[in-house]
Image 1: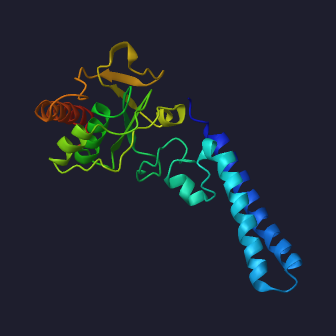
Image 2 (image 1 turned 180 degrees about the horizontal axis):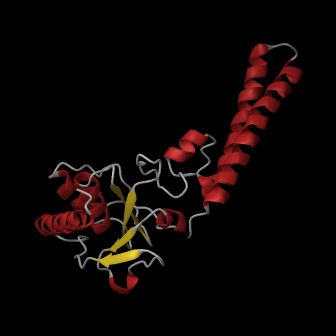
Image 3 (image 1 turned 135 degrees about the horizontal axis):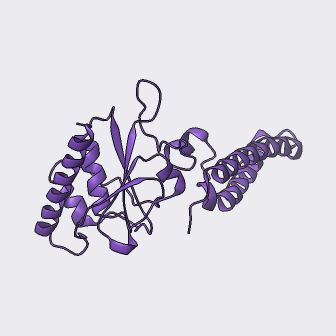
Length: 228
């Protein structure tokens, strides 16, 4: 299913926050009127009403924006990301640095390796990498986590994510991972395709070889573009 647009997610967060505020204030007033001056009863009524309202808001807006009800949290967790930049750092002129989008189908192996290597080796003031997939999996392959941990790169906190128009809009180059006709295509982006073997189901020894191949290709890209 396609991720809701940025405008729709922002609207959902704004409405959710407004309704939550109204629930808290309204339940407080209700509690005071019904408690007859008993502070404990007033607090209990306020808590129960607010809790019920919060559950309803999460069920309503959660599928759209994550129902963070907090602009700072929404931005940092992807509910309402920074438009066009995917939280990329900015250069001296205040513009987002160049972004390389590594994309495949499941975003659980090769594209995660490539983005991690790129962000480790490239000059972050010149370019950064993002990765995504057209049909993202539920987690990065464990064998990929293990092979990258061996070279000091921790991907344990990374999750596959969907390739969206908002995400692609901030990129300069699209690098696909040799997934043939299933590889994503983003009109307007310069594209490279790296014929890499899918590490899923492979032995750790073979995944190490794929990992090192990915590193060599990333180094070549960085050198060609002058992003070292």
